[in-house]
Amino acid sequence: MTNGHEEAAGAHGPRFGWFALEDELARVAEARVFVCHHLPAHRSYVLRVPEAEGAWGDEPPSNAVLERANARATAAATASLHARRRSGRRRAAIGQVLVMPEYYGVLDQRYLVPLSAAYRRRDAIGFEQLLLIPSALIRILPFWENLWLLLVSETGLLARGTVPFEAWRTRWSDLVRGSGLGRQLLDDLPEGTGDRLGAEIAALVHGDELGPGPSLEESAVLRLMTAVTASRLDEAQVSASLTCPFFRMNVTAHDLHYAVALSRLMEPQSWLVQSALEWLGPTILALPRVLDGLLEQPVAFPDDGGAFEPCPPPDDATMSRFPLLVQDPERTVRPFIALERAPDVPDA
Image 1 (tube, one colour):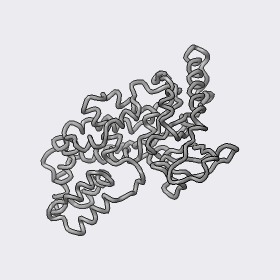
Image 2 (tube, helix red, strand yellow):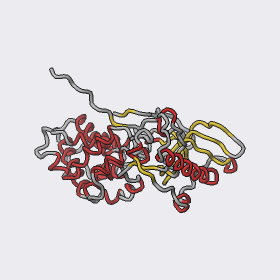
Image 3 (spheres, one colour):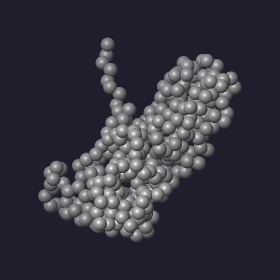
Image 4 (tube, one colour):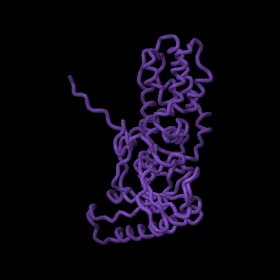
């Protein structure tokens, strides 16, 4: 389902939120340097921890004293570099372009916010803007209710033997796993659901195959669809955001699974009298644009400099929000997780 950089599932070192440490790369006079994995996004960064912080405890230590000045200096140097390039000086070949390290603030131990970028994708929104749509709001909107009614209907048919369990699991397992939708189902299983079937459904709801990451109601996919339906974003902004590396870095494997699972609900089924659109309403019409964006790799600056625009560096108030920063010295050369296109089937 995905391509790009994948981290093998397995043991990691100390963890905080959706991040985990693994290899210690170096130890210098003032800091220890680690590989830091952003687990749900399958990406790795460099984390420097002050030696004075001592052992890693339940909460990650602050490294702002080490990295804030570096982030500010990198932002200034990057802005100067690109300003010289825009001024008409000879453009270097792509292989000779200086790739500056990027610094990111760790937000809520889940997401990353760019702190040293001197540019952004035109028309894209920051991932933080998407997080302003709370998951509690998602759960009271008509689309969630419609999704719930379709789930209850198909689970009732499952309990009566009309829908095979494998077909139900294919359509719903990713949507109920770890989500409010799944917990709601366990609290209100349809009449006739036997103990064995109930246990199988519960095992899916409580499954943790994907590891830490956003639940369905927290997902970038549902938040983007909600924003489009509410006219807070248009389709051009969705496309631009999903091709912006600073937005896409927070898109997770969970999001890809949710997008595919929602697309499966659009497939006609013999046991459904109404179409998926009639069941789910107009919000589902925003899904194809999201799917298209997740099939593509983000535009990598400066490979397509015309797709980007300058942005001001973060102010002191923004910098001070993040006690922990990570850096990515190779942001432009690593692919992002993405959906894979279905292979073409030749005509018979």
